[in-house]
Length: 266
Image (spheres, rainbow, N blue to C red):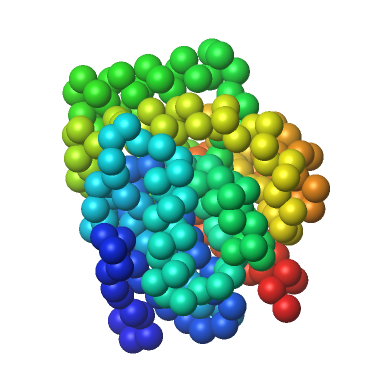
């Protein structure tokens, strides 16, 4: 495709499309930078969109074990330095949403605006126990053991029945993950919302927090609590969608992203 740059910098594989203010997209656990394919077309006419593979995902190198949230923030900082970016907007999905929160707290001068998508916040003991159960399953049996239940949580039944190609694509991404690295990063996802929940009130940049109405593990209540804690934030709940609304109904999210960034990236 014309107009797309690809590169690798210190072990991080990235792509870039469009021109204008830089917007960096940070994907979720088990995915890779291709998960943003449903957003690029809407964002790239207005912004310089950069999307990359997290450590242990896609074409990027593996993280050191045990995984720490700081490793993923450092990866993002190194990428920004490599691309000569002084400051940018960040969009993080699920695990990526936790990474961009951590990055905004530790490098506030580098972030002019923030979007947190379908991310957990302050899980209850029972909610955390449920996620840790899936971590244990991944440790014992690998990524393939978690994928079918994940797809049921992530997509509405009707969409799943009508769009097997999209589900097959996402299934293949998850199953491509390293069987030893994947559960380590999954454990980070299961636990790191706890370390962030009392800190995010220090985030000062304009922030949009979004999730799907039916995303049980990253609920509207969680998004609303985050938006209430961050001084310059608002929450937007997208009706009827589960975890992977970015793929199920891209325009519902994309229109919000474009509108938000046009307002704050003047």
